[in-house]
Amino acid sequence: MKLEEIKSYLEQQHNKYNRIDFIENDPILIPHAFTRKEDIEISGFFAATFAWGQRITIINKTKLFLSMMDNDPFQFIIHAKSSDLKPFQKFVHRTFNGDDAIFLIKQLQIIYQKHGSLENSFLQYHQPKQLPTTLANWKNELLKSNQEHHCKKHFGNPLENSTAKRLLMFFRWMVRNDKRGVDFGIWKHFKPSELYIPLDVHTGNVSRMLGLLNRPQNDWKSVDELTQALRKMDAKDPIKYDFALFGTGVEGELQF
Image 1 (spheres, rainbow, N blue to C red):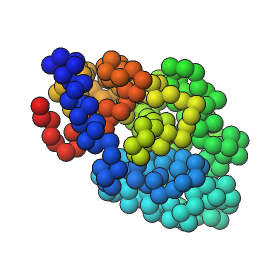
Image 2 (image 1 turned 60 degrees about the vertical axis):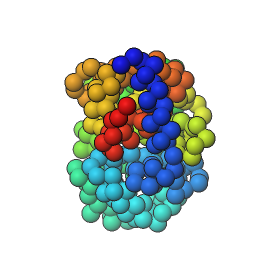
Image 3 (image 1 turned 180 degrees about the vertical axis):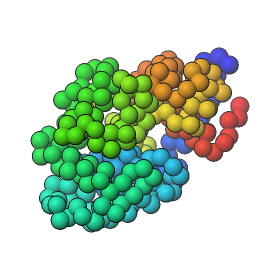
Image 4 (image 1 turned 30 degrees about the horizontal axis):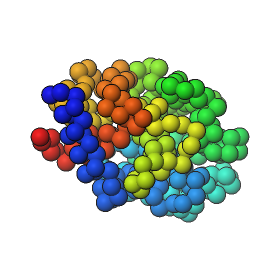
């Protein structure tokens, strides 16, 4: 297929899936329950962090996690004491355990006290067109107190050839804003053109069938290859096609 034909198809699928009624079974539903920037950041961060497995399970587990914060995540993060964290010891989602939960809450507390927002914590490492390095350096800050903590496995490092899917998905939610009410666009210092595709099984499979991705593995090299292909179709907002690729894959409807 020619690139123009692929773009036409993906634009059609993008319009089909980039809408509010498609997210009722998607983890991005979680931060839509909040209006304050900090609450959107925190709830979105945990929703993205838990984003592996069945989507309904991800949503339910994130809702449970936030309910343990009294559904007031920013206030909880800022004021949490050791005694407030004990219930989280029993939290489990796949390989994410109670120690991970408590560690992340403590680290986010430090980040908000130091930077005021998650956006600012990433922004200190930001250089134009260097998002992979930004993510790698931010992960190092997150783990600063314990580089070998079990939590490190939940956040990929692009510089080590990881897809970093969860962080890239979180960035898409925070940065993109096309006025369709799905992504939030509350991070103003990053540009949609800088984003990379959150590569998962569905996105990868559809991309390979369309000829946008040749590399067989799902790793950072594939993320970069696919993102470069999407930038040829829309240099300013290439990751809008995440809706098209993922939606087409999860619904099993690659049709022309």
